[in-house]
Length: 491
Image (cartoon, rainbow, N blue to C red; front, side, top):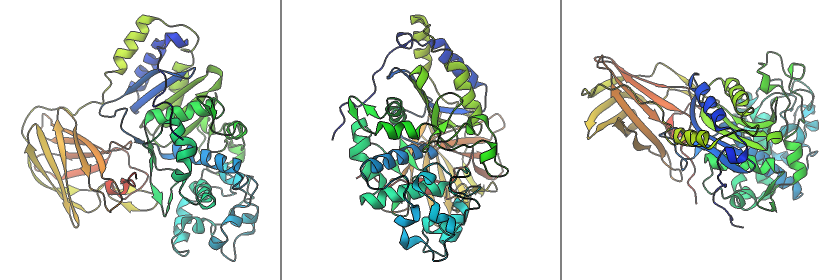
């Protein structure tokens, strides 16, 4: 099966009943927050009416979308159920007898596939750390570790956002189809939609399932349009419409009364949960940490996709709703369309201030800001003991040195330089970076190293005579540094 289209159709906002000035107001509002946007795509009536990437991010750069990965795992489960490979009311442990301990908690005998899909395993809180710890006594298998973490309540009775539930679904897809999740999805979903770039971080021999997929912004938009259209794509039924309707509607309450003690209460995170989709106050969404969203508004026949880096995801959701919903009332002008198009074509993240002064030297590494991840604890650049900054052409080279570490990245001045962090093993791709630096009025050097296939940036700041501070702007959800983000090479 091959794709019949490489991209979504394009139109102007006004031609699809959208006031482009409302999109501009959203951009203005987001610009007043701490959120850093990397891309935005707005669809109405199946066409793209607004799209933009904040340089150095670009349309042909894939992006780690964290828990948006769950929507792809959900689709794989829907396809497998439709093919009769397993059922929603199957008991999960029945499919993995080799991973189940003899003294398994009896509640696991009532833990169904539908409970895994709705984050209602009976655990009152995230179980990933506990599953990883228990896996040490179970051959290192995280799913086996999960089956050794007793649920506090009956499955189906309490919602707790917990990664091992959907990891188990991914493992179930892989086990019943004889390959990986991507192996299964490629001919059935990805190729028909023209998604050829997808790469997924692994956990053992299977994709993480709950996180780790890297795709283009437009691929997310295609996925959102697919579910908005009930699983239909260009005249072909890709996903079972009944599955899509179920997955994107409330299957589990997640308000205060149905969550574990101490759970936070952001308003758009307690409207109910489907099969790896959240219900919004309006419509539904898939989301990933730091602001990766597929937002679907059936009433407006609209899909909104964002990638970025923010720790206040509720703020971003609220701004999108506040400014875009009123814009979809049928108003709009050619002048507003043109103004928005010009703005979207020139989006860019700010560069460091730069006096043009020279800077070079060797500096001790200050890695006192730790990065905590679900599997490891470490520094932003594990093993870094010192850095060397050397002037080179129109910028610099930055070399990280330490025990077993010797990595050099080019750093631009006034423009982003392209570089790569070496892959830690065969079969993995190097990790792409974009880097820029400047020297401020006090003679300090400030470099911004964007791990460009992720939301994350390494900050390297060196004051004259001081050490080189190395830290993440916001840390990745794993603590093994840039090398840990190397992806399995595409075949």
